[in-house]
Image 1 (cartoon, rainbow, N blue to C red):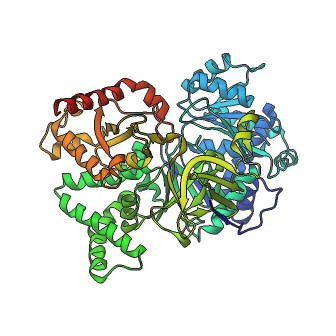
Image 2: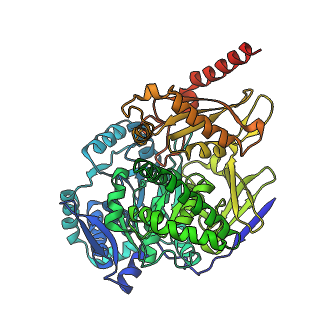
Image 3: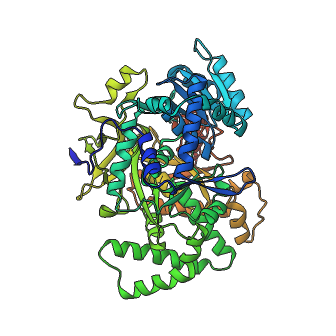
Length: 609
Protein backbone atom coordinates (compact mmCIF):
# COMPACT_ATOMS: atom_id res chain seq x y z
CA UNK A 1 0.00 0.00 0.00
CA UNK A 2 1.17 3.52 -0.85
CA UNK A 3 -0.18 6.74 0.65
CA UNK A 4 0.48 10.49 0.50
CA UNK A 5 -1.35 13.38 2.20
CA UNK A 6 -0.81 17.09 1.61
CA UNK A 7 -1.88 19.39 4.47
CA UNK A 8 -4.05 22.44 3.89
CA UNK A 9 -2.11 25.63 3.12
CA UNK A 10 -4.75 28.15 4.20
CA UNK A 11 -7.39 28.27 6.94
CA UNK A 12 -10.89 28.42 5.50
CA UNK A 13 -13.70 29.34 7.93
CA UNK A 14 -16.33 26.60 8.13
CA UNK A 15 -19.15 29.13 7.70
CA UNK A 16 -17.96 30.33 4.27
CA UNK A 17 -20.12 29.60 1.25
CA UNK A 18 -19.45 30.14 -2.46
CA UNK A 19 -21.11 33.56 -2.52
CA UNK A 20 -18.47 34.87 -0.10
CA UNK A 21 -15.93 34.58 -2.91
CA UNK A 22 -17.91 37.05 -5.05
CA UNK A 23 -18.59 39.27 -2.03
CA UNK A 24 -14.86 39.53 -1.51
CA UNK A 25 -14.20 40.48 -5.13
CA UNK A 26 -16.97 43.09 -5.04
CA UNK A 27 -15.54 44.58 -1.85
CA UNK A 28 -11.82 44.50 -2.63
CA UNK A 29 -11.70 45.40 -6.33
CA UNK A 30 -15.12 46.31 -7.76
CA UNK A 31 -13.71 47.47 -11.11
CA UNK A 32 -11.81 44.24 -11.75
CA UNK A 33 -13.10 42.45 -14.86
CA UNK A 34 -14.51 39.02 -14.03
CA UNK A 35 -16.21 38.17 -17.33
CA UNK A 36 -16.18 39.07 -20.99
CA UNK A 37 -19.59 38.18 -22.42
CA UNK A 38 -21.27 38.37 -25.79
CA UNK A 39 -23.79 41.15 -26.34
CA UNK A 40 -26.93 40.95 -28.48
CA UNK A 41 -24.99 42.01 -31.58
CA UNK A 42 -22.41 39.23 -31.15
CA UNK A 43 -19.67 41.52 -29.85
CA UNK A 44 -17.86 41.25 -26.54
CA UNK A 45 -18.54 43.27 -23.38
CA UNK A 46 -16.50 43.31 -20.17
CA UNK A 47 -18.31 42.71 -16.87
CA UNK A 48 -16.73 44.07 -13.70
CA UNK A 49 -17.03 42.55 -10.23
CA UNK A 50 -19.42 45.37 -9.34
CA UNK A 51 -21.63 44.77 -12.38
CA UNK A 52 -21.66 40.99 -12.00
CA UNK A 53 -22.51 41.27 -8.31
CA UNK A 54 -25.31 43.75 -9.09
CA UNK A 55 -26.82 41.46 -11.71
CA UNK A 56 -26.46 38.36 -9.55
CA UNK A 57 -28.22 40.01 -6.62
CA UNK A 58 -30.97 41.45 -8.84
CA UNK A 59 -31.71 37.99 -10.22
CA UNK A 60 -31.45 36.40 -6.78
CA UNK A 61 -34.09 38.81 -5.50
CA UNK A 62 -36.25 37.87 -8.47
CA UNK A 63 -35.86 34.20 -7.59
CA UNK A 64 -36.95 34.90 -4.03
CA UNK A 65 -39.98 36.80 -5.30
CA UNK A 66 -40.73 33.89 -7.65
CA UNK A 67 -40.96 31.63 -4.61
CA UNK A 68 -37.55 29.92 -4.53
CA UNK A 69 -36.92 28.83 -0.94
CA UNK A 70 -33.68 28.01 0.83
CA UNK A 71 -32.56 24.53 -0.15
CA UNK A 72 -34.77 24.33 -3.25
CA UNK A 73 -33.24 22.43 -6.15
CA UNK A 74 -33.25 24.36 -9.41
CA UNK A 75 -32.23 22.87 -12.76
CA UNK A 76 -30.10 24.56 -15.44
CA UNK A 77 -30.24 23.05 -18.94
CA UNK A 78 -28.03 25.00 -21.27
CA UNK A 79 -24.91 25.08 -23.37
CA UNK A 80 -21.85 26.89 -22.02
CA UNK A 81 -22.66 30.60 -21.79
CA UNK A 82 -22.31 33.61 -19.50
CA UNK A 83 -25.91 33.35 -18.26
CA UNK A 84 -25.11 29.93 -16.79
CA UNK A 85 -22.56 31.43 -14.38
CA UNK A 86 -24.92 34.34 -13.72
CA UNK A 87 -27.80 32.07 -12.71
CA UNK A 88 -25.52 29.67 -10.84
CA UNK A 89 -24.42 32.46 -8.51
CA UNK A 90 -27.91 33.96 -8.31
CA UNK A 91 -29.24 30.60 -7.12
CA UNK A 92 -26.53 30.39 -4.46
CA UNK A 93 -27.35 33.93 -3.30
CA UNK A 94 -30.98 32.82 -3.05
CA UNK A 95 -29.92 29.90 -0.87
CA UNK A 96 -30.89 27.35 -3.53
CA UNK A 97 -29.11 24.27 -4.85
CA UNK A 98 -28.27 24.24 -8.56
CA UNK A 99 -28.75 21.04 -10.55
CA UNK A 100 -26.96 21.16 -13.92
CA UNK A 101 -28.43 19.23 -16.85
CA UNK A 102 -26.54 18.58 -20.08
CA UNK A 103 -28.20 20.22 -23.07
CA UNK A 104 -27.95 16.87 -24.84
CA UNK A 105 -29.93 15.05 -22.13
CA UNK A 106 -33.01 13.09 -23.16
CA UNK A 107 -36.49 13.48 -21.69
CA UNK A 108 -36.08 10.22 -19.77
CA UNK A 109 -32.79 11.39 -18.26
CA UNK A 110 -34.41 14.68 -17.30
CA UNK A 111 -37.32 12.79 -15.73
CA UNK A 112 -34.91 10.81 -13.56
CA UNK A 113 -32.92 13.89 -12.50
CA UNK A 114 -36.11 15.84 -11.72
CA UNK A 115 -37.52 13.02 -9.62
CA UNK A 116 -34.29 12.11 -7.82
CA UNK A 117 -33.33 15.70 -6.98
CA UNK A 118 -36.85 17.03 -6.45
CA UNK A 119 -36.65 20.03 -8.79
CA UNK A 120 -38.84 23.02 -7.97
CA UNK A 121 -37.83 25.17 -10.97
CA UNK A 122 -35.92 24.61 -14.23
CA UNK A 123 -34.22 27.06 -16.60
CA UNK A 124 -34.00 26.07 -20.27
CA UNK A 125 -31.72 27.76 -22.79
CA UNK A 126 -33.82 27.10 -25.90
CA UNK A 127 -37.45 26.26 -26.76
CA UNK A 128 -36.19 22.80 -27.78
CA UNK A 129 -34.64 22.33 -24.34
CA UNK A 130 -37.94 23.47 -22.82
CA UNK A 131 -39.88 20.85 -24.79
CA UNK A 132 -37.47 18.14 -23.62
CA UNK A 133 -37.89 19.28 -20.02
CA UNK A 134 -41.70 19.36 -20.24
CA UNK A 135 -41.74 15.89 -21.79
CA UNK A 136 -39.50 14.59 -19.04
CA UNK A 137 -41.48 16.25 -16.28
CA UNK A 138 -44.69 14.77 -17.61
CA UNK A 139 -43.28 11.28 -17.06
CA UNK A 140 -41.54 12.03 -13.75
CA UNK A 141 -42.81 11.03 -10.33
CA UNK A 142 -42.94 14.58 -9.01
CA UNK A 143 -46.20 15.35 -7.18
CA UNK A 144 -46.08 18.92 -8.51
CA UNK A 145 -44.45 19.87 -11.78
CA UNK A 146 -41.88 22.67 -11.40
CA UNK A 147 -42.02 25.86 -13.43
CA UNK A 148 -39.92 25.94 -16.59
CA UNK A 149 -38.42 29.31 -17.55
CA UNK A 150 -36.49 30.14 -20.69
CA UNK A 151 -33.01 31.50 -20.12
CA UNK A 152 -33.65 34.48 -22.39
CA UNK A 153 -33.23 38.22 -21.81
CA UNK A 154 -36.94 39.05 -21.51
CA UNK A 155 -37.50 36.34 -18.87
CA UNK A 156 -34.43 37.36 -16.85
CA UNK A 157 -35.52 41.00 -17.08
CA UNK A 158 -38.91 40.09 -15.62
CA UNK A 159 -37.17 38.37 -12.73
CA UNK A 160 -35.02 41.45 -12.17
CA UNK A 161 -38.08 43.69 -12.17
CA UNK A 162 -39.97 41.41 -9.79
CA UNK A 163 -36.97 41.37 -7.46
CA UNK A 164 -37.25 45.09 -6.80
CA UNK A 165 -39.82 44.23 -4.14
CA UNK A 166 -37.17 42.32 -2.13
CA UNK A 167 -34.90 44.35 0.17
CA UNK A 168 -31.15 44.02 0.45
CA UNK A 169 -31.59 42.90 4.05
CA UNK A 170 -33.88 40.02 3.09
CA UNK A 171 -31.49 38.84 0.38
CA UNK A 172 -28.47 39.09 2.67
CA UNK A 173 -30.22 36.98 5.29
CA UNK A 174 -30.92 34.35 2.66
CA UNK A 175 -27.40 34.52 1.18
CA UNK A 176 -25.83 33.94 4.58
CA UNK A 177 -28.08 30.95 5.32
CA UNK A 178 -25.74 28.35 3.82
CA UNK A 179 -22.49 27.35 5.54
CA UNK A 180 -19.65 25.22 4.27
CA UNK A 181 -21.21 21.86 5.01
CA UNK A 182 -24.46 22.71 3.22
CA UNK A 183 -25.36 21.42 -0.21
CA UNK A 184 -24.38 23.68 -3.14
CA UNK A 185 -25.07 21.54 -6.20
CA UNK A 186 -26.11 18.06 -7.27
CA UNK A 187 -24.18 16.96 -10.34
CA UNK A 188 -25.43 13.85 -12.09
CA UNK A 189 -22.54 11.86 -13.48
CA UNK A 190 -22.71 11.44 -17.22
CA UNK A 191 -21.56 7.93 -16.42
CA UNK A 192 -20.11 5.25 -18.62
CA UNK A 193 -22.73 2.74 -17.43
CA UNK A 194 -26.09 2.69 -15.71
CA UNK A 195 -28.44 5.39 -14.47
CA UNK A 196 -26.73 8.69 -13.53
CA UNK A 197 -25.83 9.08 -9.87
CA UNK A 198 -26.43 12.41 -8.13
CA UNK A 199 -23.18 13.60 -6.54
CA UNK A 200 -23.88 15.98 -3.66
CA UNK A 201 -21.20 18.67 -3.52
CA UNK A 202 -21.13 21.19 -0.69
CA UNK A 203 -20.16 24.84 -0.52
CA UNK A 204 -17.02 23.77 1.36
CA UNK A 205 -16.07 21.38 -1.45
CA UNK A 206 -15.86 24.34 -3.83
CA UNK A 207 -14.64 27.06 -1.45
CA UNK A 208 -11.93 25.08 0.33
CA UNK A 209 -10.81 23.29 -2.81
CA UNK A 210 -10.58 26.55 -4.78
CA UNK A 211 -8.64 28.44 -2.11
CA UNK A 212 -6.29 25.54 -1.36
CA UNK A 213 -5.62 24.98 -5.06
CA UNK A 214 -4.89 28.66 -5.65
CA UNK A 215 -2.42 28.60 -2.77
CA UNK A 216 -0.62 25.63 -4.34
CA UNK A 217 -0.55 26.97 -7.91
CA UNK A 218 2.27 29.43 -7.29
CA UNK A 219 0.59 32.33 -9.08
CA UNK A 220 -0.44 30.39 -12.20
CA UNK A 221 -4.04 31.58 -11.69
CA UNK A 222 -4.75 35.09 -10.45
CA UNK A 223 -6.12 38.49 -11.45
CA UNK A 224 -3.76 38.47 -14.41
CA UNK A 225 -5.36 35.25 -15.69
CA UNK A 226 -8.04 34.82 -18.33
CA UNK A 227 -9.66 31.81 -19.97
CA UNK A 228 -12.26 30.77 -22.50
CA UNK A 229 -14.62 28.09 -21.18
CA UNK A 230 -15.91 25.79 -23.88
CA UNK A 231 -16.44 22.51 -22.02
CA UNK A 232 -20.03 21.83 -20.86
CA UNK A 233 -20.90 23.88 -17.78
CA UNK A 234 -22.90 20.89 -16.58
CA UNK A 235 -19.57 19.12 -16.05
CA UNK A 236 -17.80 19.47 -12.70
CA UNK A 237 -14.51 20.46 -14.36
CA UNK A 238 -15.98 23.62 -15.91
CA UNK A 239 -17.94 24.44 -12.74
CA UNK A 240 -14.76 24.22 -10.64
CA UNK A 241 -12.89 26.53 -13.02
CA UNK A 242 -15.83 28.95 -12.95
CA UNK A 243 -15.66 29.14 -9.14
CA UNK A 244 -11.86 29.20 -8.83
CA UNK A 245 -11.65 32.10 -11.30
CA UNK A 246 -14.11 34.08 -9.15
CA UNK A 247 -11.95 33.28 -6.12
CA UNK A 248 -8.83 34.42 -7.98
CA UNK A 249 -10.39 37.46 -9.65
CA UNK A 250 -9.49 36.15 -13.11
CA UNK A 251 -11.48 36.81 -16.29
CA UNK A 252 -13.72 34.23 -17.97
CA UNK A 253 -15.33 34.17 -21.41
CA UNK A 254 -17.65 31.44 -22.68
CA UNK A 255 -18.08 29.84 -26.08
CA UNK A 256 -20.73 27.16 -26.70
CA UNK A 257 -19.26 25.95 -29.99
CA UNK A 258 -15.79 24.42 -30.10
CA UNK A 259 -15.68 25.13 -33.85
CA UNK A 260 -15.61 28.82 -32.97
CA UNK A 261 -12.90 28.36 -30.36
CA UNK A 262 -9.91 29.48 -32.46
CA UNK A 263 -11.70 32.69 -33.44
CA UNK A 264 -12.69 33.39 -29.84
CA UNK A 265 -9.15 32.70 -28.61
CA UNK A 266 -7.92 35.37 -31.01
CA UNK A 267 -10.34 37.92 -29.52
CA UNK A 268 -10.06 37.06 -25.81
CA UNK A 269 -6.34 36.16 -25.92
CA UNK A 270 -6.51 34.02 -22.77
CA UNK A 271 -3.57 33.13 -20.56
CA UNK A 272 -5.06 29.84 -19.47
CA UNK A 273 -6.98 27.01 -21.16
CA UNK A 274 -9.15 24.23 -19.82
CA UNK A 275 -9.55 21.12 -21.95
CA UNK A 276 -9.56 17.38 -22.33
CA UNK A 277 -6.79 15.52 -24.18
CA UNK A 278 -8.84 15.33 -27.39
CA UNK A 279 -8.84 19.14 -27.60
CA UNK A 280 -5.04 19.33 -27.38
CA UNK A 281 -4.69 16.48 -29.85
CA UNK A 282 -6.85 18.37 -32.36
CA UNK A 283 -4.82 21.57 -31.89
CA UNK A 284 -1.62 19.64 -32.62
CA UNK A 285 -3.12 17.75 -35.56
CA UNK A 286 -4.52 20.94 -37.12
CA UNK A 287 -1.07 22.56 -36.91
CA UNK A 288 0.58 19.49 -38.44
CA UNK A 289 -1.91 19.37 -41.31
CA UNK A 290 -1.57 23.10 -41.99
CA UNK A 291 2.20 22.72 -42.18
CA UNK A 292 1.81 19.80 -44.56
CA UNK A 293 -0.60 21.78 -46.73
CA UNK A 294 1.89 24.68 -46.84
CA UNK A 295 4.68 22.36 -47.92
CA UNK A 296 6.39 22.61 -44.51
CA UNK A 297 5.79 19.09 -43.24
CA UNK A 298 9.48 18.34 -42.63
CA UNK A 299 10.05 21.63 -40.84
CA UNK A 300 7.08 21.06 -38.55
CA UNK A 301 8.17 17.49 -37.82
CA UNK A 302 11.66 18.69 -36.93
CA UNK A 303 10.20 21.47 -34.77
CA UNK A 304 7.94 18.98 -32.97
CA UNK A 305 10.82 16.59 -32.32
CA UNK A 306 12.91 19.47 -30.99
CA UNK A 307 10.12 20.66 -28.68
CA UNK A 308 9.76 17.17 -27.23
CA UNK A 309 13.53 16.66 -26.88
CA UNK A 310 13.98 20.06 -25.22
CA UNK A 311 11.17 19.37 -22.75
CA UNK A 312 12.54 15.93 -21.90
CA UNK A 313 16.06 17.28 -21.45
CA UNK A 314 14.78 20.13 -19.28
CA UNK A 315 12.95 17.65 -17.07
CA UNK A 316 16.20 15.72 -16.62
CA UNK A 317 18.20 18.76 -15.55
CA UNK A 318 18.87 20.87 -18.63
CA UNK A 319 19.17 20.87 -22.41
CA UNK A 320 22.60 20.96 -24.09
CA UNK A 321 23.62 24.11 -25.98
CA UNK A 322 22.90 22.70 -29.45
CA UNK A 323 19.39 21.69 -28.49
CA UNK A 324 18.75 25.07 -26.86
CA UNK A 325 19.80 26.85 -30.06
CA UNK A 326 17.55 24.65 -32.22
CA UNK A 327 14.70 25.22 -29.78
CA UNK A 328 15.19 29.00 -29.92
CA UNK A 329 15.19 28.91 -33.73
CA UNK A 330 11.98 26.89 -33.96
CA UNK A 331 10.40 29.09 -31.30
CA UNK A 332 10.65 32.00 -33.75
CA UNK A 333 9.78 30.02 -36.88
CA UNK A 334 7.10 27.57 -35.67
CA UNK A 335 6.10 27.71 -32.01
CA UNK A 336 5.26 31.42 -32.06
CA UNK A 337 2.74 30.82 -34.87
CA UNK A 338 1.03 28.04 -32.92
CA UNK A 339 0.87 30.22 -29.81
CA UNK A 340 -0.67 33.02 -31.90
CA UNK A 341 -3.36 30.62 -33.13
CA UNK A 342 -4.23 30.06 -29.47
CA UNK A 343 -4.45 33.81 -28.84
CA UNK A 344 -0.78 34.52 -28.21
CA UNK A 345 -0.90 34.72 -24.40
CA UNK A 346 -1.55 31.14 -23.27
CA UNK A 347 1.12 29.94 -20.85
CA UNK A 348 -0.75 27.20 -18.95
CA UNK A 349 -3.60 24.76 -19.43
CA UNK A 350 -5.51 22.27 -17.30
CA UNK A 351 -6.12 18.87 -18.88
CA UNK A 352 -8.34 16.21 -17.37
CA UNK A 353 -10.85 13.51 -18.16
CA UNK A 354 -8.33 10.98 -19.47
CA UNK A 355 -4.54 10.69 -19.70
CA UNK A 356 -2.65 13.08 -21.96
CA UNK A 357 0.02 11.32 -24.00
CA UNK A 358 3.54 12.04 -22.77
CA UNK A 359 4.79 13.10 -26.20
CA UNK A 360 1.92 15.57 -26.53
CA UNK A 361 2.62 16.94 -23.05
CA UNK A 362 6.30 17.40 -23.90
CA UNK A 363 5.42 18.99 -27.25
CA UNK A 364 3.24 21.70 -25.70
CA UNK A 365 5.76 22.26 -22.91
CA UNK A 366 8.44 22.72 -25.55
CA UNK A 367 6.20 25.15 -27.42
CA UNK A 368 5.87 27.24 -24.26
CA UNK A 369 2.56 26.02 -22.82
CA UNK A 370 2.71 24.03 -19.62
CA UNK A 371 -0.21 21.60 -19.47
CA UNK A 372 -1.08 20.85 -15.87
CA UNK A 373 -2.58 17.40 -15.92
CA UNK A 374 -4.77 16.47 -12.99
CA UNK A 375 -6.84 13.57 -11.81
CA UNK A 376 -10.33 13.83 -10.47
CA UNK A 377 -13.97 12.81 -10.64
CA UNK A 378 -17.32 14.48 -10.15
CA UNK A 379 -17.09 12.98 -6.65
CA UNK A 380 -13.88 14.93 -5.95
CA UNK A 381 -15.05 18.36 -7.19
CA UNK A 382 -12.84 17.92 -10.28
CA UNK A 383 -9.05 17.59 -9.65
CA UNK A 384 -8.03 15.95 -6.41
CA UNK A 385 -4.42 15.81 -7.64
CA UNK A 386 -2.51 18.20 -9.87
CA UNK A 387 0.81 18.46 -11.65
CA UNK A 388 1.49 21.78 -9.94
CA UNK A 389 4.68 23.72 -10.80
CA UNK A 390 6.60 22.67 -7.69
CA UNK A 391 6.41 18.95 -8.57
CA UNK A 392 5.75 19.14 -12.33
CA UNK A 393 6.55 15.96 -14.19
CA UNK A 394 4.97 15.01 -17.50
CA UNK A 395 3.50 11.51 -17.45
CA UNK A 396 2.04 11.94 -13.97
CA UNK A 397 -1.06 13.70 -12.62
CA UNK A 398 0.87 15.21 -9.73
CA UNK A 399 0.37 15.10 -6.00
CA UNK A 400 -2.80 15.60 -3.93
CA UNK A 401 -3.92 19.20 -3.84
CA UNK A 402 -3.69 20.70 -0.33
CA UNK A 403 -6.17 19.27 2.14
CA UNK A 404 -6.41 15.95 0.31
CA UNK A 405 -4.82 12.51 0.44
CA UNK A 406 -4.34 9.58 -1.92
CA UNK A 407 -3.92 5.91 -1.05
CA UNK A 408 -3.08 3.05 -3.44
CA UNK A 409 -4.28 -0.33 -2.19
CA UNK A 410 -2.41 -3.58 -2.69
CA UNK A 411 -4.54 -4.39 -5.75
CA UNK A 412 -3.72 -0.99 -7.28
CA UNK A 413 -7.09 0.67 -6.62
CA UNK A 414 -6.90 4.36 -5.89
CA UNK A 415 -8.65 5.79 -2.80
CA UNK A 416 -8.97 9.48 -1.94
CA UNK A 417 -9.93 11.51 1.11
CA UNK A 418 -10.07 15.22 1.92
CA UNK A 419 -11.76 18.57 1.43
CA UNK A 420 -12.55 17.98 -2.24
CA UNK A 421 -14.42 14.70 -1.69
CA UNK A 422 -18.20 14.93 -1.96
CA UNK A 423 -20.55 14.10 0.88
CA UNK A 424 -22.24 11.19 -0.92
CA UNK A 425 -24.68 10.05 -3.60
CA UNK A 426 -28.19 11.42 -3.36
CA UNK A 427 -30.77 8.90 -2.13
CA UNK A 428 -28.29 6.01 -2.45
CA UNK A 429 -27.38 4.86 1.10
CA UNK A 430 -26.40 1.39 -0.11
CA UNK A 431 -24.06 2.85 -2.73
CA UNK A 432 -22.54 5.22 -0.18
CA UNK A 433 -21.84 2.26 2.11
CA UNK A 434 -20.03 0.49 -0.74
CA UNK A 435 -18.14 3.58 -1.90
CA UNK A 436 -16.54 4.67 1.39
CA UNK A 437 -14.26 2.74 3.71
CA UNK A 438 -15.00 2.69 7.42
CA UNK A 439 -12.29 5.35 7.95
CA UNK A 440 -13.63 7.73 5.29
CA UNK A 441 -11.68 6.88 2.12
CA UNK A 442 -13.56 7.00 -1.19
CA UNK A 443 -13.03 4.09 -3.58
CA UNK A 444 -12.51 5.64 -7.03
CA UNK A 445 -12.49 2.45 -9.09
CA UNK A 446 -9.35 3.68 -10.86
CA UNK A 447 -5.95 2.02 -10.77
CA UNK A 448 -2.67 3.82 -10.17
CA UNK A 449 0.66 4.01 -8.42
CA UNK A 450 2.84 6.67 -6.80
CA UNK A 451 6.32 7.48 -8.05
CA UNK A 452 9.31 8.19 -5.82
CA UNK A 453 8.15 11.78 -5.18
CA UNK A 454 4.53 10.82 -4.41
CA UNK A 455 3.22 11.86 -7.82
CA UNK A 456 0.27 9.82 -9.02
CA UNK A 457 0.37 7.80 -12.25
CA UNK A 458 -3.00 6.45 -13.44
CA UNK A 459 -2.71 2.98 -14.98
CA UNK A 460 -6.31 2.10 -15.80
CA UNK A 461 -9.89 1.62 -14.69
CA UNK A 462 -10.50 -1.34 -12.38
CA UNK A 463 -13.76 -2.37 -14.04
CA UNK A 464 -12.35 -1.89 -17.55
CA UNK A 465 -9.41 -4.26 -17.26
CA UNK A 466 -9.57 -6.81 -20.08
CA UNK A 467 -8.59 -10.38 -19.31
CA UNK A 468 -7.62 -12.35 -22.42
CA UNK A 469 -8.34 -16.05 -22.88
CA UNK A 470 -4.73 -16.62 -21.90
CA UNK A 471 -5.27 -14.84 -18.57
CA UNK A 472 -3.32 -11.67 -19.39
CA UNK A 473 -4.66 -8.49 -17.74
CA UNK A 474 -4.69 -5.57 -20.18
CA UNK A 475 -5.55 -1.93 -19.40
CA UNK A 476 -7.24 -0.61 -22.59
CA UNK A 477 -6.86 3.10 -21.81
CA UNK A 478 -3.09 3.17 -22.38
CA UNK A 479 -3.48 1.61 -25.83
CA UNK A 480 -6.49 3.74 -26.76
CA UNK A 481 -4.80 6.99 -25.79
CA UNK A 482 -1.76 6.16 -27.92
CA UNK A 483 -3.90 5.36 -30.97
CA UNK A 484 -6.16 8.37 -30.53
CA UNK A 485 -3.16 10.70 -30.52
CA UNK A 486 -2.72 10.13 -34.27
CA UNK A 487 -4.04 12.88 -36.53
CA UNK A 488 -6.35 10.56 -38.55
CA UNK A 489 -7.97 8.97 -35.52
CA UNK A 490 -11.03 10.31 -33.77
CA UNK A 491 -11.70 7.49 -31.30
CA UNK A 492 -10.37 4.04 -30.48
CA UNK A 493 -11.87 1.22 -28.44
CA UNK A 494 -9.64 -1.70 -27.50
CA UNK A 495 -11.36 -5.07 -27.05
CA UNK A 496 -10.28 -8.60 -26.14
CA UNK A 497 -11.99 -9.61 -22.90
CA UNK A 498 -12.07 -13.43 -22.97
CA UNK A 499 -10.57 -13.44 -26.46
CA UNK A 500 -7.27 -15.00 -27.62
CA UNK A 501 -5.67 -11.61 -28.31
CA UNK A 502 -6.28 -7.85 -28.23
CA UNK A 503 -7.98 -5.98 -31.09
CA UNK A 504 -9.23 -2.44 -31.70
CA UNK A 505 -12.11 -0.57 -33.31
CA UNK A 506 -11.05 2.78 -34.77
CA UNK A 507 -13.01 5.76 -36.09
CA UNK A 508 -11.60 8.45 -38.38
CA UNK A 509 -11.54 12.20 -37.80
CA UNK A 510 -13.85 13.66 -40.44
CA UNK A 511 -12.46 17.16 -39.97
CA UNK A 512 -8.92 16.03 -40.79
CA UNK A 513 -9.46 13.51 -43.58
CA UNK A 514 -10.01 15.91 -46.55
CA UNK A 515 -6.74 17.80 -45.93
CA UNK A 516 -4.84 14.53 -45.39
CA UNK A 517 -6.23 13.06 -48.62
CA UNK A 518 -5.24 16.18 -50.57
CA UNK A 519 -1.71 15.98 -49.15
CA UNK A 520 -1.50 12.42 -50.52
CA UNK A 521 -2.81 13.42 -53.95
CA UNK A 522 -6.08 11.57 -53.29
CA UNK A 523 -9.69 12.67 -53.74
CA UNK A 524 -10.66 14.76 -50.68
CA UNK A 525 -14.32 13.87 -51.23
CA UNK A 526 -13.75 10.13 -50.80
CA UNK A 527 -16.61 8.79 -48.70
CA UNK A 528 -16.04 7.61 -45.17
CA UNK A 529 -17.27 4.16 -46.19
CA UNK A 530 -14.54 3.92 -48.83
CA UNK A 531 -11.92 5.22 -46.41
CA UNK A 532 -12.58 2.39 -43.95
CA UNK A 533 -11.01 0.02 -46.49
CA UNK A 534 -8.66 2.42 -48.30
CA UNK A 535 -5.16 0.88 -48.60
CA UNK A 536 -3.35 4.11 -47.68
CA UNK A 537 -5.55 4.68 -44.64
CA UNK A 538 -5.09 1.10 -43.48
CA UNK A 539 -1.33 1.29 -44.00
CA UNK A 540 -1.15 4.51 -42.00
CA UNK A 541 -3.21 3.00 -39.17
CA UNK A 542 -1.08 -0.14 -39.15
CA UNK A 543 1.95 2.07 -38.51
CA UNK A 544 0.05 3.66 -35.60
CA UNK A 545 -0.76 0.21 -34.20
CA UNK A 546 2.85 -0.92 -34.61
CA UNK A 547 4.09 2.17 -32.76
CA UNK A 548 1.53 1.60 -29.99
CA UNK A 549 2.52 -2.06 -29.65
CA UNK A 550 6.17 -1.08 -29.17
CA UNK A 551 5.28 0.25 -25.69
CA UNK A 552 3.66 -2.94 -24.36
CA UNK A 553 4.37 -6.65 -24.07
CA UNK A 554 3.49 -9.07 -26.85
CA UNK A 555 0.53 -10.42 -24.85
CA UNK A 556 -0.87 -6.86 -24.58
CA UNK A 557 -0.26 -5.91 -28.20
CA UNK A 558 -3.03 -5.26 -30.71
CA UNK A 559 -3.12 -8.04 -33.32
CA UNK A 560 -6.03 -6.84 -35.47
CA UNK A 561 -8.16 -3.76 -35.99
CA UNK A 562 -11.15 -2.54 -37.96
CA UNK A 563 -12.17 0.94 -39.08
CA UNK A 564 -15.78 1.98 -38.49
CA UNK A 565 -17.71 4.13 -40.94
CA UNK A 566 -19.49 6.21 -38.28
CA UNK A 567 -17.77 8.03 -35.45
CA UNK A 568 -18.63 7.60 -31.78
CA UNK A 569 -20.48 10.73 -30.68
CA UNK A 570 -22.45 12.14 -27.78
CA UNK A 571 -25.63 12.01 -29.88
CA UNK A 572 -25.09 8.35 -30.75
CA UNK A 573 -24.82 7.58 -27.04
CA UNK A 574 -21.25 6.28 -27.32
CA UNK A 575 -19.49 9.29 -25.73
CA UNK A 576 -20.22 11.10 -22.51
CA UNK A 577 -20.56 14.91 -22.71
CA UNK A 578 -16.95 15.10 -21.48
CA UNK A 579 -15.91 12.96 -24.49
CA UNK A 580 -15.20 9.73 -22.61
CA UNK A 581 -16.08 6.42 -24.25
CA UNK A 582 -19.22 4.74 -22.93
CA UNK A 583 -17.65 1.30 -23.13
CA UNK A 584 -20.74 -0.70 -22.20
CA UNK A 585 -22.85 0.98 -24.88
CA UNK A 586 -20.13 0.55 -27.52
CA UNK A 587 -19.65 -3.12 -26.69
CA UNK A 588 -23.42 -3.71 -26.83
CA UNK A 589 -23.97 -1.89 -30.11
CA UNK A 590 -20.86 -3.23 -31.83
CA UNK A 591 -20.94 -6.79 -30.51
CA UNK A 592 -21.26 -8.21 -34.02
CA UNK A 593 -18.33 -6.07 -35.25
CA UNK A 594 -16.13 -7.49 -32.49
CA UNK A 595 -17.21 -11.04 -33.29
CA UNK A 596 -16.38 -10.46 -36.97
CA UNK A 597 -12.90 -9.26 -36.03
CA UNK A 598 -12.08 -12.53 -34.32
CA UNK A 599 -13.86 -14.69 -36.89
CA UNK A 600 -11.79 -13.12 -39.70
CA UNK A 601 -8.60 -13.52 -37.68
CA UNK A 602 -9.39 -17.19 -37.05
CA UNK A 603 -10.09 -17.71 -40.76
CA UNK A 604 -6.76 -16.09 -41.69
CA UNK A 605 -4.93 -18.27 -39.20
CA UNK A 606 -6.61 -21.38 -40.61
CA UNK A 607 -5.66 -20.46 -44.18
CA UNK A 608 -2.05 -20.00 -43.18
CA UNK A 609 -2.03 -23.30 -41.40
